[in-house]
Length: 208
Length: 235
Image (cartoon, rainbow over all chains, first blue to last red):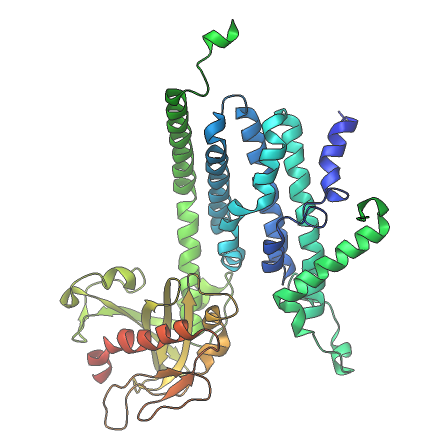
């Protein structure tokens, strides 16, 4: 069973032309906070994908029953419940990473991508496409996080996922880790470089 | 026709019932998840505590070997009261946060003993308040019950990069060799000062730049938490 043309667009669009971070400029704050190492970036990417996918699914299933006056509250309850579950699961099975991510998992609740997709997509579409839209946007967000985390850990610590990748002989020749990469401002600059790269490849995205 | 049979979605009663049902369902789901995962989380927390105790002994352990290292190094553990007498109780399961809510006479303070190179080390528990929430730590003293052998600190949510730096090994290392009692045998604690400043009459270490409130919290925690062990330390 292949995906229809439309569903494919919903799933893969956010990875490129519709990327929540590099095109829509959402969720930047957590992209800065959790990307100094690759591992928390990956865990954060997975967590956000799970939350956006399932909150989109649940809200889409409920979309014809939610009283419009309290729809934001219902969305928040659903998102908060999912985030709490993710947090509990991480505490049970990935304790060290959950300690590292600390408050940022809880702050997924306020990630604009999640609420944005609920309002813009899940409230008006069927559960199947909504679920795909959630996965797509989570992955689009995660892709940027992982790219940023990759460069920051590689250049800042000389490691990837905790393993030393820059050989000792480099250090002996005078190479040094760039401590600036660990600091939040460099995340912004790496994101900016990604945006620059993406827009120079894709002329449609350039503002007139 | 259909519209009539369905309740009006915008009515107050529908809204009320809807919210009630949603909230109850969510509460049940969360309670279930929390109950199911609790044993695994408790195990992780215990291992984390062991790692912190080992860190204060200047032993680096990861979550894989913490239990084995702990068994090997910690030779004895017990609880003492404010008079420094050993009383009934289990040190590891004693939560200092709960003890501090009890009347002073009933409080129990955990003590762990470890052997390093044949010498006894005493590990004391600490708890205090930082800027955003609780901070805690373990202080390991040499067998003179005065000189610091090592220290480790933890926090629940201090500002990353500022107050949160207290849990880095570098901060704990600054305490090595400092003394809690002055030359007259009086308890004076160890002061945390702004980097570059000094104090008279007691040992001191540099606080965290930009983490002033957290540093002050550590200062108060040392005074209060180690202070309750005075009678035990004098024995």
